[in-house]
Image 1 (cartoon, helix red, strand yellow):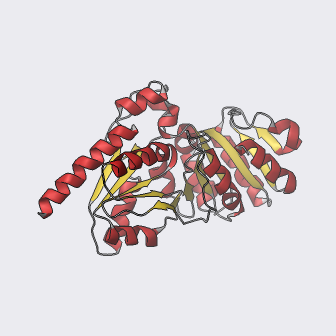
Image 2 (tube, rainbow, N blue to C red; image 1 turned 180 degrees about the horizontal axis):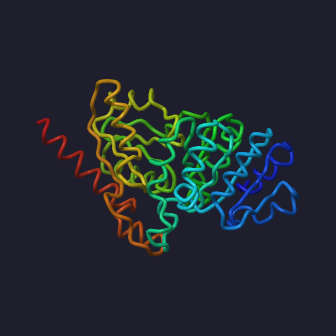
Length: 307
């Protein structure tokens, strides 16, 4: 089932659902004919869309709004903070082409600070599905939440058919346990990280893999357990280093008065070079081979220090 098919099914069963877009219909082209006047296109007006969605939510509706992730989270940030966060309204924000998924677009269209921005808003929940199957698995619970939520939309199909486990808000998906290295990853880079895991296992390493899924609330209990059971945690994210998963781990460890060996793979103080997605991943060194190579170097350096 696709994202559009599931959202249509949910909307037809629940008249509270209002589907909105700021002239971004890529994922929902067929919805106007299926749900009629409960589909609203405000045009290229992200701020107006959020204000209207807040008004609808105050009337008992559940708006599911769509826009390019960069403009949704930045252009309409103050409206999201004030209209949705302060009022704790159950509007669902669907950010299209977040992170590396904006591939050929330049810095103005790159949402690589969106997690940092949105998780800083009280009451706001933040989600990042690994692929379309994961998105479909997560969507019903997100829509049923009484809090506002931001979804880093990822509707890509992976090269392999991975059957994701049922989703619970605030819980991660533990793919495997590993004593040497454990990857913590979310969104688009799940696929390449899973392939990197296979490369490292062929080299004899014990490798864990966690699909974070829910960045806020986050699975703090699992992260603390992993920190005690693995030699090296590697965070993999198409986001700025500041404010993303690496920062979240730092907050968790400091709060719990502990530390861990963490190697972050993220963008550091610069936007990525636009190109086709495969070229972006190669240039920015997020291919399976590069993820494995960097992780091998870090674990070997760590092991040398302990000898």
